[in-house]
Length: 415
Image 1 (cartoon, one colour):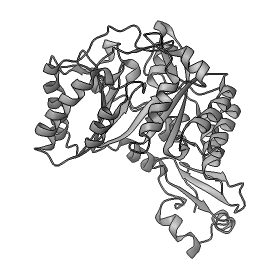
Image 2 (cartoon, one colour):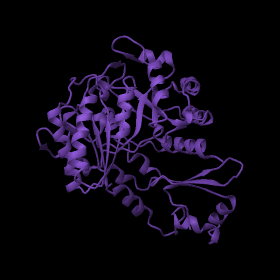
Image 3 (cartoon, helix red, strand yellow):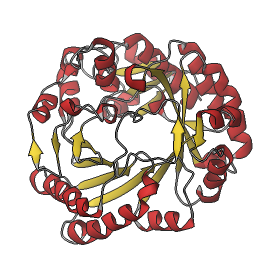
């Protein structure tokens, strides 16, 4: 009897004691009592452990953990995650925008059919049963009329013919939200809106000023408060490595200005400038500082998303695609504009060998012994590319990710 390698056993320092077991493959968690903890250490079968056996928190000593991890990471999802960038245009000019070097193109009405064809292809040939569509940019709401026209065709040609589930999200700077847009999103099963606030008002307005020269912070806060009871909001905040302590003031300001902090979630992402004025998300070197910030946010009643610590690289999966204004299809948002990494073009009906390349990349296969392989899958491919020039290079951040994950679980679940 043992706790498998992919299950992190985290000490519960709360009153109940024991441990929190966190399955890194499926994300499930359970609190075990000191008595159960002792029984596991002593390898004693007991009725008190029955539920842990059934849910895979404990396994036989000869259990093939690698096979379980391999199957978990190899599983091809029945959900098609499509992110559409209808435009590169934006009504803001942010310091760190990774799209600053690309032409300000936009999709036109005539391109909607190509998007619909791609979705139908995924349903008919890849047997997808659910579609998740995210709109980002640029600022996607600049092209709100395009989005409306897209959904007219989506309703008719996809939902009218195929028995599938669907949901949409919008990643926006938040400045253009209004009653008309919110009503439309609600009618089309929008499950979330992500907006960005980069720190306290003074800092945000310096980094994310509207192109007409106006500040944007109060406008975004007002829009969140106006619509947060109708559609869930995620507030993303980008910060530079070494500036984690500034987040305390930002959290205080959110707690003060947001009408109901229980209705928002916070996603913290560290950024680092690289060549071509791009940035990539990276693990903070100041792990202890970030861990304390996350704990502070929870204590203030603001839920922090686990993606603040690490998002598994999804570049390997054919279930995830980003389609940009010129029709190119990418597996990673950060690779947008690097046409050598595009897997095809929906406007030109062109495919290339890059799709097979990414399908067979699977850096994670060399990490099957690692307890957190399912959290990072061998590291960010974009970061590998800008750091080493080799997109296939493994980036190991075991220590940072495990420590931050432990701090996150403790901050959120300690009882």
